[in-house]
Image (spheres, rainbow, N blue to C red):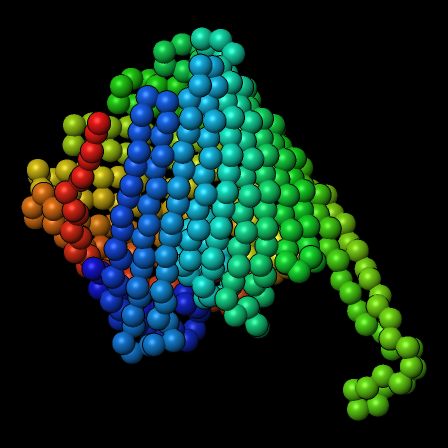
Length: 377
């Protein structure tokens, strides 16, 4: 159970929508494991109620199932998931930009195959599908989309502490209805290294090329128009605009653990699908810190900055920057009860806008964790 106050729920400049809310979020996880088979899944819900702003009330859910089968030299994997939530929750965190507050249902499916070539080398192939459906997109600029991705990876264990991998990938993005399409080809290399048992890091760097296609259709009246009616033949004119862009991709991280502290840092540049009818290039830098103040009390800090640019030219004037910082305190009352309190500041600004949207969120969460139930045979 969570209670919160947000002084700018929609994160808009100028006029702000403030609201106090109550959130109930039940969650259950299930798993099945043998020596060769693993299945893990979960179901959760989030019932959000804002007594003074009922138009913000939402009922969200998430469900997922993933598994793997280990053979003598092969591993087969799969995963399916579906999640319904608000764009200002997940899509903003993924891409760093969102223009409207709407419900989004994101359904995903993926499959993988990994072949052990030797004691140190492996080859894997993956495929992923996702579909996003938005509720009530009228006047928002949001559009449903589908995305496909395929990749082939070769990995080699260099020694006990390091590994090297090279990946070739292809991603396809298509709006529904079909107006914008993007095909992205990429190649990247990843290097992971553990400096010690408590300090590790890695970097993935590569190059990508994106080919985009924008289609527009206009109905033309061959005759005269009276009171909005065409007296003559009506035909459709189509126009196609193509564009090609390229650039580097990057994803690097560091993680350091001590007896009481954990530090992480991340720097990335990635291509992501978005609900604005285009793909986006998102630069992100962020970090987290957590510390055990006592056996029952802990503190954490999470901060990130985003810079987002639209690829393909179909969305103009909406490149943006987004910042957030979130300190939190947690108190484990008993083995099953946890009390958390936190604050989040967020700021988003769009290119060419006269001002930035700023929001302050304070929350208090009470969590009960059921004792784990396990069965064996």
